[in-house]
Image (cartoon, rainbow, N blue to C red; front, top):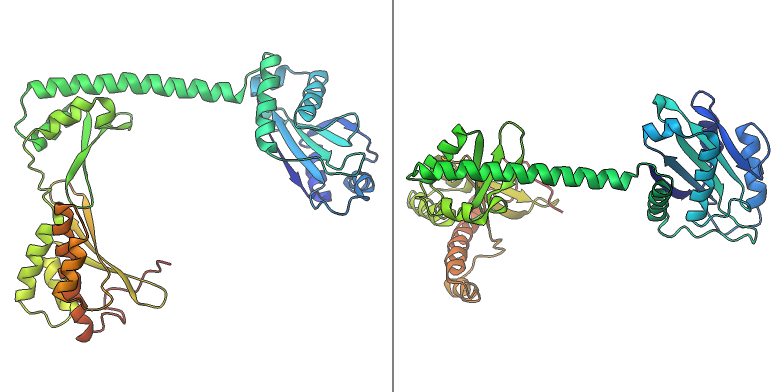
Length: 373
């Protein structure tokens, strides 16, 4: 059983939907007259007329037993469930006007409630956390009546998934041990052996191009896990193998390519980018709404893994002096990061010079601008 509730303004069209005889039948009502939607709505409005402060004067709710339970429940039981539900969300069914309708489409019996939210003192019934209240009340009613609760189904599904995952992880590790007994000489060889057992090993490469870990995909089911989740020693064992994936630090390779290109003395950014692309690096300019460059992104596709490694060059609003670059670098304590930022700053600084020689900030032949705001 599941349920929900919310406060609404209410409308004749909404009542039309509820009382449509093709969908079901009226289960119960209190303090209402009329058969037509306009008459029913007028009956509600008369009782709400002395409250001019509240904008949403109705509570609408649905209570949906599991299909099997719904077929077994008779109208008397459905009425009792409706009234218990209203009490649970803070409505007194003896003092409030309400309409209870049973819909039976697709052999799935469920209850719709339209309730007057304005009480006998012309105050609006509180609707704080009404969705959560509705879920909790439905669970309580289901447990009391021996019905299936949506919360129990969810928990069962979670437990089943955990059980399946545990068995799958055990199987993956067993295959891993068999592969390691074959003594693979490198990571790529390990990946090849695991593939033959039905598992795809995906190296995880971070933004700097360093090997960070692995993911394991079971090809038959599509289930995927972090290798460290299966067993921490598994990831550690694989990373001890010779790394032949070509995942050395991207910024270092990029800077070597940059230095070679700068020796060719490109006359503008288009030419610079063309040279860099021939060496495996693609440049994308990310612009704001006014067309100004916000970021320069450099993409390198790893030839072994197929992963795209993205490096973002720092934004240089003006050409920096060597002292300014040095000051920015020294503000970082991590030595590896110092080298990384130095490479990126030098590149960004030199690329800034192209603005004087080309239409770098007015839109290049291959860029049309990306809104990043």
